[in-house]
Image (cartoon, rainbow, N blue to C red; front, side, top):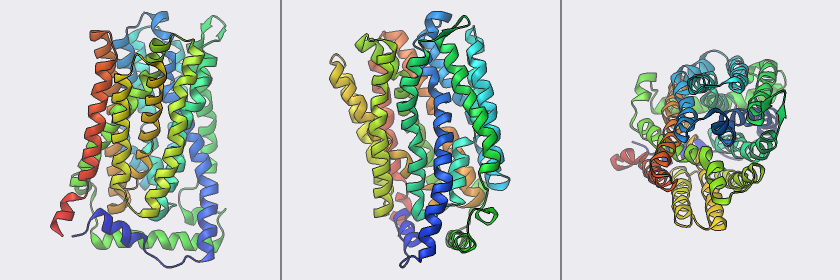
Amino acid sequence: MTTIADDTKRIATSGPEPEVAERARHRIARRLLPFLFLLYVIAFLDRMNVGAAALQMPHDLGFSEGVIGMGAGIFFLGYFLLEIPGALIVERWSARRWIARIMISWGIVTVFMAFIHTSRQFYVVRFLVGAAEAGFLPGVIVYLTHWFRYQDRAKAVAFFYAANPLSYVIGSPLAGLLLGLSWLGLRGWRWLFVIEGIPAIMVGAITIWYLTDWPEQAKWLPADEKAWITTELRREKEAKNRRRSYRVWEALRHRDVILLTGCYFCAMTGSYGIAFWLPTILKRLSGKSDLKVTLLAALPYIAAFVTQQVNGWHSDRTRERRWHAAIPVFVCGLALALAVVYRTNLAMSVAMFVVAGGAFYGFQPVFWAVPTLFLSESAAAASIGLINAVGNLGGFVGPMVIGYLANRTHSFSPGLLYLVASLFVSGGLMLAVGRQTAAQT
């Protein structure tokens, strides 16, 4: 039996690459990654803008912290329902059509958020935003397997995932500015949803003609480059199938898929718990204006961009995945614990949140390279959908638990310590991936 590390080395081993390989890899990356990056920036602006809106919305609508936390989290219940079908649709039907549908529908529903007045309306619209966006992330991860070899995949995912922290760097000060608006009798938080929902609709329409589903369909790719990448991806698929070809239901029951699902759930509990409540926590710690608070909240994501790229590059270079995914979540948990310890010291708390955010985002690009190592085609698509669907329920649990504990204790410390425990469990589960096969060799 082989281990994750053995499979990584086998797939990555090759002689010097021909000149056509270098041209093809660069052309594909230049064509696809910047556009996918833009899509993910818009996705995260629309997903997390409720965190900035929470600086005004509770006062205007009479919502408690529990209501806001529930609304932030209920997004992921809608998100959960369509994740696996969405990933399979990308693999079996059309990535560009499905991604375009996702963007247009979530943009429309995000605009609806500007017109809510009751907690029930808040819950319903947040649920619909989640359902509309479901399938986007696993769809893109699957889509990247249509274009990038395994040995290039962590760098490609890292570039795409860079949109995640940078969306906070862009979105936090942008949200701070939009919160200051007051047009046509609507407060700034309402304009925040309108102005950030429209770009998703516009770019979704562009996606239909810009993206290409498969290399053999790419008119923008020269014939020799098209032949090279098609051959390379076919060889990778054949190598996986020689080891074992999993059916969808077999893949979903695979020990390592279950471990990866638990790992991602605990990691997302910590990540979204921090991301959603950070502006409110910093507001209470500092007492500064909304704009200054949103600028402070952007600092962790500047560090995140750097660690994400460096960790993805180093993981590809060393062909090691487990420790490159586990160490970032351990460091994030430790930094978050120190932020609680030093909560009365604003400078130290902000510094620890910066370390926590910077560390965590090194985890994701490496993590997503693991399922596609031992699975392919529909089995990989379904497993990625499962991991992301169940994992992102952590986005429901994290904000909700913090909101609940803050209501009960009038402090964010207990909730943050819950996130610390969740992050440490995530790191432990990541290190368990592949252990069983290693023991059998």
